[in-house]
Image (tube, rainbow, N blue to C red; front, side):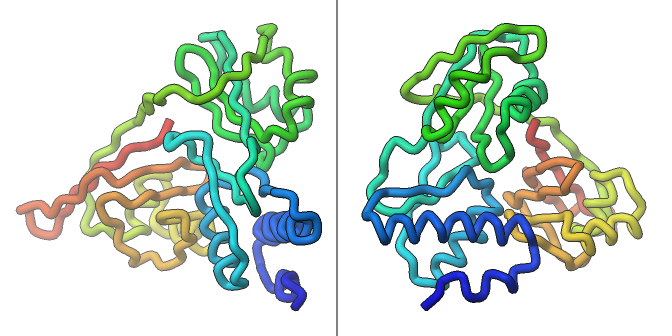
Length: 246
């Protein structure tokens, strides 16, 4: 059976590319017996690819550098040291400057792992790209940098912006409207254009109700976790508390 037979039916171009690359790695593993891995995957990509692999009956495993990381890899065969961790001793660097400098040396989103700012910069990298990183990633903005390879990440202390507001219900379109600072009609446009995800699954239904613990992602707006939902004594009102990932 050709495992790529139906790949053209997948509408999202990035999903098609990610799946095609992953299946190529699986074919290499089958033919050579060598362990292979995907590139870095965010949680939405991971869920999509795992569902496809389950559908095909392909055995695989997943790995991330630490529980604090958001990006994972899928690998076939025995685990090897697919992921490296680097530290930069500079407390003045900003996340966007680190990302911009990585793009400047040839990285793209699939090559880029997690980046944490905590008493300097910690970043995860695919080991096969270590030579590129170590030879080219020598400056971020005005700062000359030196990469230190380390064994593991420290415990990461995450910071959040908190939001609390009242609505008439926990409908998704109402919450998107408030968080994106757009009208309700414009919020419906976000949903129709596949720009809204709940727990890393794309949601189109405006009447979808958010619950405590849900992860809401709105493209170009941010990623939020529903901290608490409360029905108020005042008739027709509810209150929602969210944390926005910084």
